[in-house]
Each structure stands twice: as C-alpha cells, then as structure tokens.
Image (cartoon, rainbow, N blue to C red; front, side, top):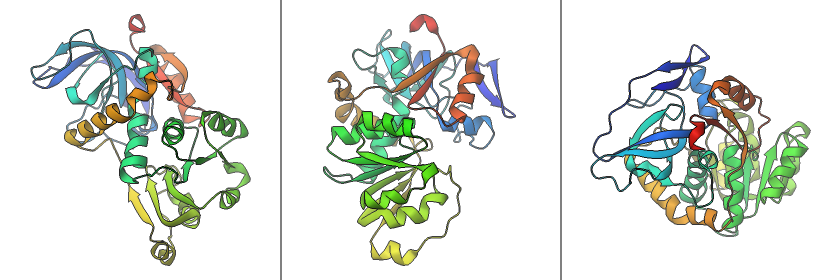
Length: 320
C-alpha cells in the first residue's frame, strides 16, 4: 500500500506492507487524514512515534471498514473516523477497534477526518484533567488552531465562557464567531488579558514563553494544562505564586497514552460529545482539503501558522 512518511525533513510517498488485522482490530480503507502539528514535528525528526506505533504520518483519519477482526463490534462497510498513534496517511490502516468512532450523521468523510484528535485533546484536557465545571472561565492560547476551535465549541456547549489569544484580528473574529467572548492579539502583547481574567482553566500549547503570564492570569485554585512547547521548554516560575494560588499545573500528552486509556476516552467522547454534532451544536472546522499529491503544500500551510481550524488530506477521493 502507499503511505506517507517523513524522511530527513521531507515527505515521501512509498510502498509499505499491508498490515494484518488481528483479534479486536479493524482495517479501514482511508478516505482522508487530518493534519496536526505533531505531523510537522515528526516529519522534521523531532517527534518519533511511541514504541510499537506505526512510523507512517497521521494521527487521525476517516474511512470505511473493510475488515473486522473477531471481537470487533464494527461491520464491513461502516463509515468511521479514528484516533491513531500513527499510520493515518496511508491507503489502509489497522487499529484497535475501540479507537474508532462512527462518522456523525450529516458529515462527510473529509469533515470527519478533522474530528478525532482535536476533540479528544480538548475533551481530555478541559473536562477530564482540568475537571471544568459549568460557569468556570477558560483561556485558550492559540484559540484559532484545530484544538482551539474544538475547545471553543465545547466551552460554549457546556456553559463555560472562554477567551483566546491569537495572532491576528481575523483569527480573533473567527474565534468569536465560534463562541469565544473575546481575546487578545499576540502582536499587541497579551497584557489586556488581565482585564478579562482571572481564569479558572488555561489550556496552553505554547509553553515556556507564556508561563509567567499564565501564573498571573489564573484564579485561586486555577488549573493550567500544558499540551505543547511552541514557545520553548524552559521557563522560570514564581513558585510562591503557584503555591499561594494553589494552582494545579498539568503536563498532558495524548499520543503515547495506552490503548485502554484511549478506548475509555473515546467512549466518553462518544457518549458526551458526539451527539452534539447531530444536534448542530458542534461543527467541524475544516478550512481546506488537499489531495494526497499536494501533501507538501498542505504541510507548508499548516507550518505558516495562518490556519483557522483544520486541514485535511484526501487519501482516496472516490470515498469522499
């Protein structure tokens, strides 16, 4: 089968063995795969897959079940989307059957490919780890990103006012259209966030460069969940402020979680979040699709940091 790999900083479509489908697994004919910053890092050689995971790019995909191993509840022909540790940017992928979700009613396979990674990330970090309660205030850094776009909609759906930091006025308007109360622009400094806080929860993919600010912006008993290092990995923290405010700082990753953890997370997502798509309260924020032959252009656009929402690669256009 054809598959996309990152080789010495370049993208390369190559032939790979077709994986076997074992007990409790399903084989998916891939229609589309969502792009994530992790794919950029893996292409550059900075984010290798966890032990035992595929080195093929792609942490989420959608498609059609073409084989179901014993013990799987899926049927051949069903439309699914899936959370992966790798392997989504290929003609086929074999996964733990528990890591697939049904395509929400009314959505295309291209739209569904933009859901699993960002909604699983937002739900895990805001509602499970940070234990967000209705009415609590949230600050989302990089609010126009894929995860930010999902998080804004979840906050609106579950009664949490949220604010964002973004890179442009256009992206702030995009976030406000999704349900954010407002926010601040990086280029103008983020000091105005002090007037909007304090915040009960901060979801931060930036890291070191926002560390001091986050401490200042959090309310007493606030929760700061760090999910990325776009702004560096080393920072000085005022531990007296951390202690005095009783702040909880959590480092969180999803890709290297074990199969059982992911299965339980996706089951929770299907119960609590997936019905909201059918109700029209959540919508995939698919900014643009690219064909597989234009993968370089898709990766370049994602790296530009000008994307609002998600980019998706169409692997098999006959399925979309």
